[in-house]
Amino acid sequence: MEAQRLDKYISSQLAGVSRKDARELIKRGKISVNGAVVKIPEQKVDPSADAVSFGGRQISYKRHLYIMLNKPAGVVCATRDRLSETVTELLPPELRHEGLFPAGRLDRDSVGFVLITDDGELAHRILSPKSHVPKTYFVRLRDVIDPKAAEDFSRGVTIDGGEECLPAELKILSERECELTLHEGKYHQIKRMFKSRGNKVVYLKRIRIAGVSLDSSLKEGQARELTDAETARLYDR
Ligand code: URA
Image (cartoon, rainbow, N blue to C red):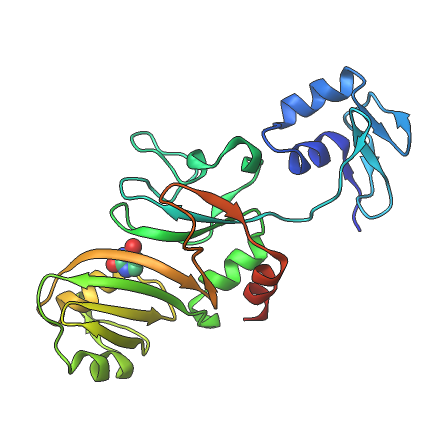
């Protein structure tokens, strides 16, 4: 595995510790490598071979972090925003790490599963329309759902501006409620798909990404790390 600077390693592995904090901890003699205190932030460590400890406790190395957040309405899918609270700002201190970002966007008024990670490669795969990773939404509509919509969506509809959508699966749950699975993520896609049928989305919640379901015990605003089995499922796609 590639060696990295000690301060970078520390800030990537310890929650709530910035690069600046990490340099401070190192200079104060709180960090040891293979049993010896190291006071040089630039020193290189090999995560797969070196044992790094903080305050006498060994840090178990995690290459990446994968977090499931149940996003509330009113919060934006970004790391920083001048006006609104962001999904990374909602994370509890024990899940805050350098380099985290939301892998994909939900509109400000949409709720549900947002994957937050520092794994750029996985995020790219999940987001790329070429990889067709399924994302499922629970949708509530203003008007009764046209039964023909399922067939139309399965063929791929054209939405305003002439954009063609990939085939999507619609499962009607009741007169005004359904689940819709997309394999891409165009801007306001579901709202625009239903608008093209003369209907209007009044509530939108993402409930599944690539076969991983939103944990129903997470209240809006709560987050937890993905289990190893859930992470493996994301990688399977
Ligand atoms: N489609 C939308 O219209 N909005 C979302 O937030 C997600 C999918």
